[in-house]
Image (cartoon, rainbow, N blue to C red; front, side):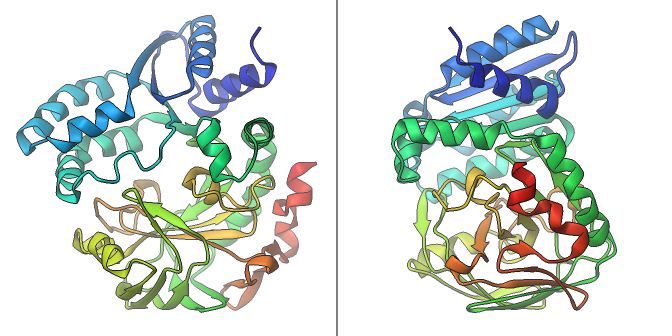
Amino acid sequence: MVDPRMSKLAEILLDHSVRIQEREHLMIELRGGGVELAKELIKQAYARGAYPHVRIINPEIQRELLMGTTEERAETIKQWEEPIVRGTDAFIVINGMNNDSEMADVPVERRRMQQNVMKPVNDLLTNHRRWVLLNYPGPAKAQSANMSTEAFEDFYFDVCTLDYKKMKEAFSPLKELMDQTDQVRIVGPGTELTFSIKGIPNIICAGEYNVPDGEIFTAPVRDSVNGTISFRTTTQYMNTRFDHIRLRFENGKIVEASANNTSRLNEILDLDEGARYIGEFAIGVNPYILHPMNDILFDEKIAGSFHFTPGQAYLEADNGNRSVVHWDMVNIQRPEYGGGEIWFDDVLIRKDGLFVHEALLGLNPENLKT
């Protein structure tokens, strides 16, 4: 018998996230575990009159393929993948990897080669197709969260099946306020940062692209970022973990970057010109996600957090920055993580992780849970 929570999650993914319709083509991409969810998605997609397709990717085999890839091979993959993306209406990607560091020893130049060649296809999928990405619960994810497998599964379904319609409505006043905002100021331990978001769209994320979800994102005007930001949350990028990242900006550009692995950090930021500029600023509100677990799909939605993203801007909130990098770095401002404030045009919006602006109180955890 199918776990009713699994059925509810499948319904959310099909009806709320990708909004699948009769006779549309749905690609379910399975990366590692998640077979039970994939089966339920297939069953429910058929029930809606859609055409489900499945692609199974084994991370160990994928690593082996990347280890020996060439630009010519990457071009061939692009020729195969582009017709698939053009012929598919919606994508659901289930990330069930048991080892998040499986690609850690793939040379950077190999990954960069693949990313550069595949970027037009990935942009087509991201910006012109309906899609959703979710991580599947398993022992590795439970370990990252410092939970038992059973406890993590309970947490996972609470997080992933909350009332996203209610969340979307609660986001509306914040979007209206951000639409009217020019200057943003963020302060906290090791952080004194200013930038403009004037004229950049503000996008509500409430279960349409990521599950779990709970953020609103925009982008700073590309050359407007000045000051310093310090991150107190572990982040992982290109299969390398980083702690204590500190970035200093001048006129939008990261001119100084340090971390526990400063050389590797700067190696990534030097992949191209756009990697040293910010492509996204987002505020997280998911009431069930309170602590980092080194999983960006969860960590970027932490209640009382924001993330600041070196690299590629999304076309929906475009500041013109282009890069093969898109690295969401999370800063938590609740008191147990040092506190902090967000100001819009000299008005205090959020303090120590809780919204204080009267129109935004519905986004605080106690209100989103009820």
